[in-house]
Length: 373
Image (cartoon, rainbow, N blue to C red):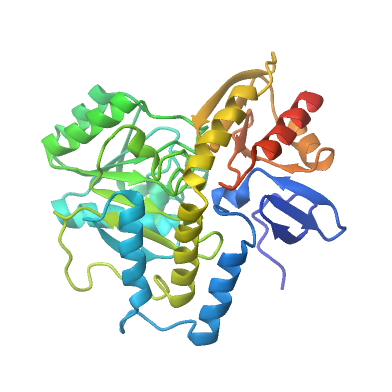
């Protein structure tokens, strides 16, 4: 049997990692400024994280959600305090896409309506509902395309209101910062207008913080820069530093009923051990503050070049939009300077480093980029 050939792979085989560093099977060291799609939050192989998983595995690794798991309750309490949402409820699942599926389902259950408003250049996942609200026709199959979804322009409050006024919208889903679409930051004013419009027309505001959350932008969630309080907040990626885990935070006015949501693996013991370790490390090492400080340093010191049109983002969620295709630049960064970066489209290099990135490591990238350009 062979693997289903859907990934474009670089000829690099990582075998070991620590902090913001990766080593391949030939012993070559790399600086990781991508974190495996923003997944590595507290750094590769953090000793507290590794110890937590090993210790839990010695006790019990899995049982279903038909019995009590106190680790879930502990995570709910600690996450509520860390995020500023102690009055919300937590539902645990396995990934960002699943979190967005649950958010969309919850909005429809709560309102009794069946249409969703999403935004151009959005990305919310590859499962049925999540990909339907993703603005990328290449990954939307005919089966996925039958959901009732309307795409509006980012920052166009009037366009959103026209759709909400039709009376059939269950929810509006928006990323804290658009990631795969090119690091587009919704204006704070637009986010506040969106919150007010959802309240006025009885739709739920669904905040996709899968990539932009968990401290990445210098706030626990990116939407907190605007001071809004969504009805549902979705999480994934950095929540457990690479162990599959996701979840949604649910406002108090949305009531649960038995069986309304469910999952086999969500909230399992190992995922909870990983997620609790991540929260403790973020708190004790001030990684939210570090993301803000190092991100601002990085953004301010990106070299001036006729090849770079704009640098966008907040904290350690940054994108450099180029005036030319970036494939060759990214390849040189990887194979000549040994630095992992990401991409959005054909003209943007995306930086999603672990939140523990140091200023010295950021400086290493800046020097390398100058030399490549």
